[in-house]
Image 1 (cartoon, rainbow, N blue to C red):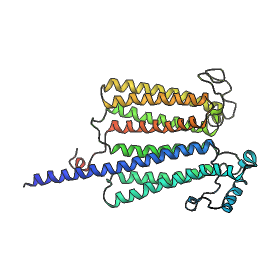
Image 2 (cartoon, one colour):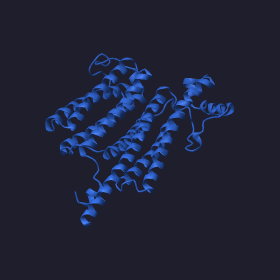
Image 3 (spheres, one colour):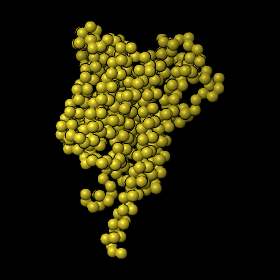
Image 4 (cartoon, rainbow, N blue to C red):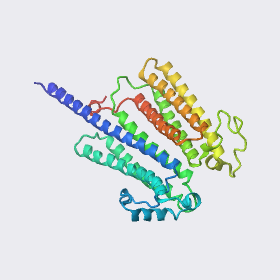
Length: 365
């Protein structure tokens, strides 16, 4: 047996092992994505039910245990009765009514803690057993660090509603949701980088277009979070006209003017609408452009499907607005935004192909 034969056999074994390890890691990351999407949806329900301020303390470890008896429930309820939301909005609510909002917030925090373990423990296992590729180690540590930061941002958001307000700051809510989406997108990007693609990477122009589209989706999600934070979807519930006009008046009553883009519900909703039109047009443009430059490819088919997803999300958003944001449609709109973001990131990663294997790196390919 020659050295070349031995070398070829060794390379084949390495490739088989890498393929198996990538499959295991990819399955793990898909599970993380499911939990992350669930956290976002439960967070939306927490917001829509007014439950986000029901737990007035941040106990990262001890807080995983809910009240276990009547006395502990009364203790939690007494803490809630000391904040402005109770005094101004919920004064006189019963213990059972408090428990209903408590459980939403507790579930949201429980899931957030759980995903930390879902990332950290398998990460340690894959790392220590040599199943994690070198390039993935800093990426996964960075994602884990973002998760820890997200916990702190979540409490920073809740704290904004405990003293002078009856709800949380829309600025902090938008930051919290956007960071959650960044984490989701990062996990999706890594997971799809480990996938096996039958086609070669797309042209650089297609890759750049796909990347910029992800940025647009992030901006729209941030704008949607501002709408949610200001309850802006509960007013001007007509479409395509808004307040009787395509461009409503009195969009800039607050000084300085830039505050209107973050604090005036009318302006915030109008900007969210307009940017949705822009995202839809860009999605159509991308579908047409990729279909012309790479006809018959999976890249083109994904671009077309992405445009369809954007159209569906727009239809859900319009229906939600016209029906004055019922909780079911509101959560569907938020959940489908995560689907849109995930598919956008998956499309972007697919245009670039999968991560190179170690054997390819060694061979200089």
